[in-house]
Image (cartoon, rainbow, N blue to C red; front, side, top):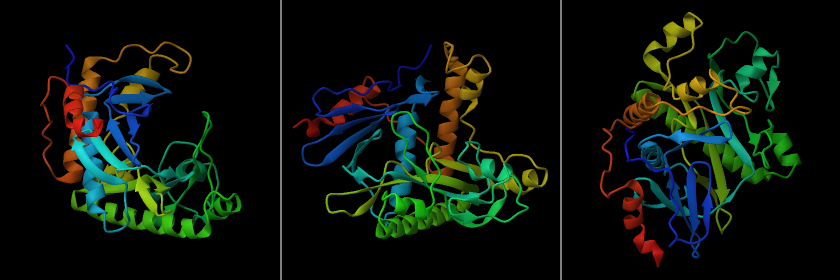
Amino acid sequence: MRTPRVLSDAFIPELPNHYKGKVRENYDLPDGRRIIIATDRLSAFDVILTAIPFKGELLTQTARYWFEETGDICPNHVLDYPDPNVVVGTRLDILPVEIVVRGYLAGSTNTSVLSKYRAGERDMYGIRLPDGLRNNEKLPEAIITPTSKALDGGHDEPLSRNEILAQGLLTEAQWDIVSRHALSLFARGQARAAERGLILADTKYEFGTDRDGTIVLADEIHTPDSSRYWLAESYEERFSKGEPPHSFDKDFIRSWVTARCDPYKERIPEIPDELIEQTSRVYTQAYETITGKTFVADLSGATVLDRIRKNLEPYFR
């Protein structure tokens, strides 16, 4: 029997301006604050596959660790954490460019540097990579590989600095600030990860502007959903053998689905309980390894939603 401690839905009628995303549910308050509730939903193939116990809490607390570790580098949107699944932040105008920072030749999407490199490309994202690099090899230096933020179901498109400026997506001053912040955040992330026996191979950042036009870090930072982490201990041996590095593998649900159907055309079978529990354990392991803290779930309230509603009561007014 599946645990009742999952947050599949976070609709709270007492809060205004509700927007439901694939994973998060948002409420915009009249004073310019935004309440962001991380549910336990797992999204893939443009649908919600299932809910993973404690996923929202684990990701929120992982991001909290990193926001607090990097607050001296750049401002972020966080104002308060009234509940383990909830962030109250400053409402931002999100910049139309997703900033991806890569320290290694890795990835599987068509916009990843590895996919492009294996296809023979050396000039990408306004950067020239040297010949002779191998899969998952460390790059000479960390690079920024920006992409457009796709709208209306489109695909993210690779961009260079010059393209971003020419298309008016960012001003030159904004690009300079965003790129400086991103590289500094990534360097801090890599250093902290190394202390935990991890390699932060790549990550993505979202930035926005507040009412004063200040560029602010938004969304999440260095979570296992937004970042690629490898286990440092076995990296060199596996790299020398041409094997992929060990990582926090949360994709076995996606793999299980694609082995049984075409998820874009056929009905997706129900996800087995054991896979759901395994995924929850991986998120827990990731949190504990990244932060160095033991995860203790907040089990107060009859359900997760009951607990969140109680903790958000001050915002009802």
